Image (cartoon, rainbow, N blue to C red; front, side, top):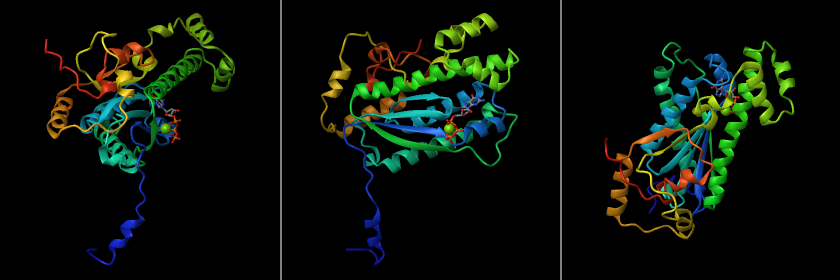
Length: 288
Ligand SMILES: Nc1nc2c(ncn2[C@@H]2O[C@H](COP(=O)(O)OP(=O)(O)OP(=O)(O)O)[C@@H](O)[C@H]2O)c(=O)[nH]1
Ligand SMILES: [Mg+2]
């Protein structure tokens, strides 16, 4: 029985359930961060404080949402991956996106004074958009992650060279752009080295590789398992007992969330950290 004559309006709520058995990636992106970065005088092309603030907010999101298995951040964006068997919010896109975006934004503002102690925030406050995309296979998910990391590399090499030409070479923006038009990666490396004695390989890993964030269980020997294949063979939601779910949840909460700057394109990263794809918590490393 309806509780009131108004309750029929519930029927207007459209379902926005994401396809089952697919990896959900929620990517958030800073709104108008070109302007925002200028307002707070972010260093060009990379501001370490701004990137570390993004990482701190992402870590907090992951701690609050144990369903997230891995995150990857560059510039003003962060991708959060939910396991293909995840049933959080019945896989409703709007609830997943808004929860991640608002939690991230809340922590970004919360941690701002830690990273920018001398420049208090003022309106317009930082905000983020978000989207959810489903990837049907492990290969699709890994290609997505590789795509973001390749983007990080291409953008960072370009920006590093562009700003070196301006800041160290005295060129204006138009001249720097013209110098770089049509150049290949090797040529940008050469410009950096021959003109400015900068060896791109020695640039900080966070800038070259972006930031990967995951639960830091004990690494395993590669080749001792085939997680990708096992997880591809899962065809429907796994029915786990309440005690198993609770025990997994506890292990996830206990695990340290770590931020590293690693190659996520090669197999090794995934082979040594099977829990990211399997969703089975690994071993908590012993304290030294
Ligand atoms: N100076 C500086 N700028 C940064 C840094 N990180 C991000 N940005 C700025 O943020 C922008 C991010 O790109 P986009 O997300 O495509 O641009 P946007 O201005 O945020 O626009 P929308 O996302 O469409 O709202 C870059 O182009 C930079 O201008 C940084 O570390 N230093
Ligand atoms: Mg943006």
